[in-house]
Image (cartoon, rainbow, N blue to C red):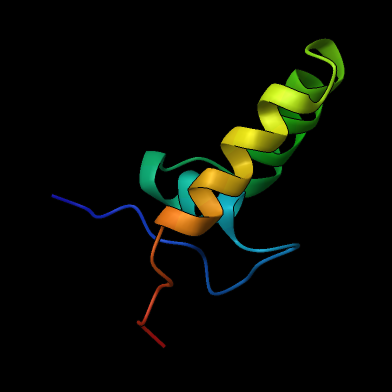
Length: 63
Protein backbone atom coordinates (compact mmCIF):
# COMPACT_ATOMS: atom_id res chain seq x y z
CA UNK A 1 0.00 0.00 0.00
CA UNK A 2 1.30 3.44 -0.93
CA UNK A 3 1.89 5.99 1.80
CA UNK A 4 0.69 9.55 1.46
CA UNK A 5 3.78 11.80 1.45
CA UNK A 6 4.59 15.32 0.39
CA UNK A 7 6.11 15.58 -3.07
CA UNK A 8 9.79 16.17 -3.84
CA UNK A 9 8.70 18.58 -6.58
CA UNK A 10 6.62 21.11 -4.66
CA UNK A 11 5.10 24.33 -5.96
CA UNK A 12 4.41 25.60 -2.45
CA UNK A 13 4.90 22.79 0.06
CA UNK A 14 4.26 19.57 -1.86
CA UNK A 15 0.85 18.71 -0.38
CA UNK A 16 -1.06 18.77 -3.67
CA UNK A 17 1.80 17.01 -5.47
CA UNK A 18 1.86 14.27 -2.83
CA UNK A 19 -1.89 13.78 -3.06
CA UNK A 20 -1.61 13.63 -6.86
CA UNK A 21 1.10 10.95 -6.65
CA UNK A 22 -1.02 8.96 -4.20
CA UNK A 23 -4.11 8.94 -6.45
CA UNK A 24 -2.10 8.72 -9.71
CA UNK A 25 -3.25 11.92 -11.40
CA UNK A 26 -1.46 14.96 -12.77
CA UNK A 27 -0.47 17.38 -9.97
CA UNK A 28 -1.87 20.29 -11.99
CA UNK A 29 -5.36 18.78 -11.78
CA UNK A 30 -5.13 18.52 -7.98
CA UNK A 31 -3.75 22.07 -7.69
CA UNK A 32 -6.50 23.51 -9.90
CA UNK A 33 -9.12 21.56 -7.95
CA UNK A 34 -7.74 22.90 -4.69
CA UNK A 35 -7.82 26.49 -5.96
CA UNK A 36 -11.36 26.08 -7.31
CA UNK A 37 -12.55 24.55 -4.05
CA UNK A 38 -10.91 27.38 -2.10
CA UNK A 39 -12.65 30.00 -4.23
CA UNK A 40 -16.06 28.37 -3.81
CA UNK A 41 -15.69 27.81 -0.04
CA UNK A 42 -14.28 31.23 0.89
CA UNK A 43 -10.69 29.92 1.32
CA UNK A 44 -10.82 29.28 5.10
CA UNK A 45 -11.90 25.57 5.13
CA UNK A 46 -9.47 24.60 2.36
CA UNK A 47 -6.69 26.60 3.98
CA UNK A 48 -7.20 24.84 7.30
CA UNK A 49 -7.22 21.38 5.70
CA UNK A 50 -4.15 22.28 3.62
CA UNK A 51 -2.13 23.43 6.64
CA UNK A 52 -3.21 20.39 8.68
CA UNK A 53 -2.07 18.15 5.81
CA UNK A 54 1.20 20.09 5.67
CA UNK A 55 1.78 19.41 9.36
CA UNK A 56 0.75 15.74 9.26
CA UNK A 57 2.15 14.48 5.94
CA UNK A 58 5.80 13.36 6.09
CA UNK A 59 8.24 14.52 3.47
CA UNK A 60 9.07 12.07 0.69
CA UNK A 61 12.52 10.72 1.46
CA UNK A 62 12.94 8.97 -1.93
CA UNK A 63 15.48 10.99 -3.88
